[in-house]
View (cartoon, rainbow, N blue to C red):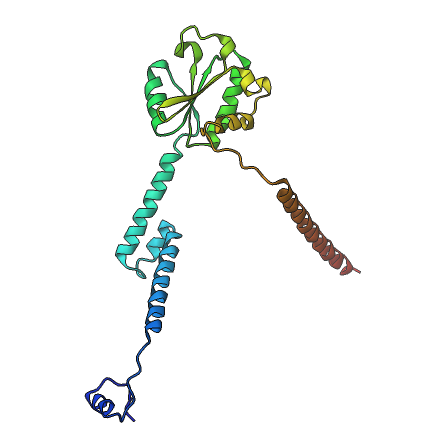
Length: 243
């Protein structure tokens, strides 16, 4: 029997005479549902591509539209370049007075700059340099530099070093003078980080909820105990095998 829903001239005549029922058609709600499903599928596809690496995008060339892949590859390259540009430092650089405007004032228009005014023969300055070396390695988006104090500022007194100058937005944000600002000979990278974070020169340390940390420790201890128990049971089984 011919399909009564077939789109033929004969069926149209039979429908017009009432012999065949009206052709089945999708309701408005069904059409809207279909359209929503299509949009959702497209969004999921785009999200999946967002999570792909450049190598994985290369492997999908035969499965997706070249234009879309090129777009996502370009986007990923920009993200990688932006991350590399942001994390471009990583060490404390020694500068001289003629470099100061370029390396500090001008540079601080793009990122924060921390300047250490120091003297090599002062122990607190040596300790400060050690702390800044670690911070520079941890926070590569911040520029750390050092300069001999009296070469930067003529007749700068030794009692004022170590001094940290914090620059941002092309201007000085803080002038921190003397070792006592940082804990004297008890200064630590963590303590200096907390001070720098007040001026947004580095990210602030995340505060861990003691209760949550305690729960995590308990869970780890329970998991370790359970694992040790399983190992002991296995050892007992092995020992029984020798009798």
